[in-house]
Length: 284
Length: 290
Image 1 (tube, each protein chain N blue to C red):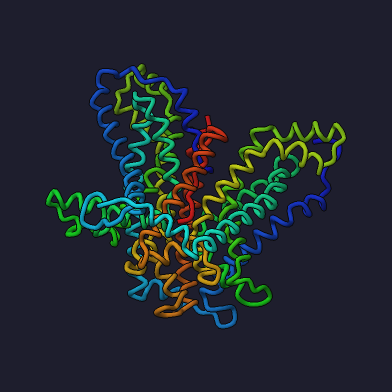
Image 2 (image 1 turned 90 degrees about the vertical axis):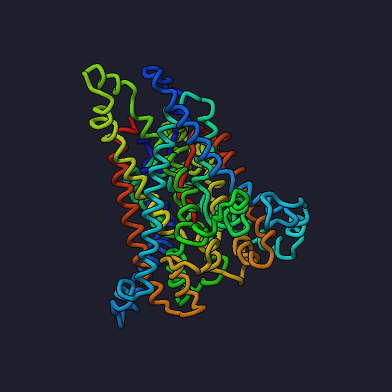
C-alpha cells in the first residue's frame, strides 16, 4: 500500500452512497415485500402465503410456470450443450465466430419484442403457419403460440444461446491432452467421457440448466406481450392481482411474488455454487 | 461466478482435431445441420417482424402482397412517438449517469484500498439477478407509495429501479476493465508522484477505464430502452415509455408495434456489436430483463 492509506472514516464515506442506495432500493423493498406477504406487521397472518399453495387458480399458475420453466430449461440446456459442443469441435472454423456472435446477441433477447416477433411467424396469420398450410399442414390444429408449448418455443430463443455461451468455456476447458492421455493409458472413447468428460462438464451443465430455469420462471414481459392474461402463469397472476382489473388483492400479489422470489433466488444461488465448482476447470 | 465467456479468444487458439479425422465426416454434417437450424431459428423471427413492418397486406400469403414504408413514416409521425421514445431515452441516460456515479468510486476503492469489501459489493451488485423484474416492481411500489418517501408513479422511481437492474452490468464492465489495467500499480505510481486520491481517480484511473464505463453504459442502455415490466408497473400511462406504448398499440395498429420492435432490435444489436467488436474480445452476456 502507498504511504497515504485511506482512513476508516474516509472509506465509509466513500462507500456510503452505494451502500445507502442498495439498502434503500434492494434490501428494504425486499423486506417490505416479505412483510406485505403476511399482511403487515401488526395483524400478520400466513393465510396469503398458504393460499398460494391451496387456492386452485394459484396452484394452477405455479404448476404451469414450473412446467414451462422445467421443460424450456431442460430443452434449452440439451440443445445449447449440443450446439456448444459442435461449435468447439467443428472443422469449419470460419463459421464459428459468426455463430458465437449470433449466440451472444440472442442470449440477451427477450421481453416484448421477442413476443411480437414470434406472433408474426407463428401466429394464426404468421409466415410459417401459412407456409405450412401450403404444404397441407394445419399448424394451428396441434400447436398454438398462445399456449405453454408456444411459450416454450419462444423462451428457447434466449435459452439455447444462453446455454451455448455458458458451455463454451466448459468445452474449451476439456483439453485435447486429456483425451490423448486417456487413450494412451488404454482408455476407450467411452471411458474418456465417463471418467473425464462428463465429470468435468457436469457442474457447468447443471449451473446452466438452473440459470435457464430461473430466467424462465421470472420472465413476465415476453409472456405478457404474447398471451396477455390468457395463460395462468405465476408472473401473469401477480400482475392480475396487483393491477386489480379483475380482482385487487395486493397482499395476495405480495405473497405470490414472495414465493416466486424464493424459487428464483434459490435457483440463482444453486447456479453460483455449481459455477464455482465448474471454475476449477474453466479458470485454468 | 460470472455469466461470461471469453470463448472467441479461447477457441481461436484451439488446435483443429485431427485424431479421428476419418470418422468425423458424418459428425461434421450433423454439426452443420445443427448450425443451420440454430441460425434459422435465431433469424426467422427477425425476418418475420421486419417484413411485417414494411408489408401492405399480409394475412394469407407466405410473403407480403406488397411493400411500403408507410408504417415507418406513420410511426415516426405518430404524436406519441417522440414523447414516448424521448422519455425512454431520458430514463436510460439518467440511469447511466446515476449508475456510473454510484459504481465507479466504489469499484475503484475495492481494487485499490478496500479489497475486503469486495465480496459485499459483488453480492449487492449481482443481487438483482436473483430478483425477477416483476418482483422488483412490486416491492418498490409497496415501499415507496406511502410516507416517509412517496415516489410511486414518478419517473424518479423508474430510473432508480433501472439503476438496480443495471447494477450487475455496470459491475461486470467496471470489474473487467479495472482488472485489465493493473489498478493497484497505477494508483501507487500516481500517489508516489504526489497526486491526490481525487486527481488519481480523475486523471489516471478514469481515462484508463473509459472503455469499461462505455461498455457498461451501453449494456445499461440496451436493457432499459424499450423496457416494459418496470415502466408499466411503476409509471404506467402517467409517464408512458416506448415499451408501454409499443404494447398498447398492438391491438389497433400492429404494424406500428412491429416498427417499434424493429427499432428496439436494431438498437440492441448495434450496441451488442459495438461491445463485441469494438471494445474487447470478451462478450459479457447476462440474463436481461424479460
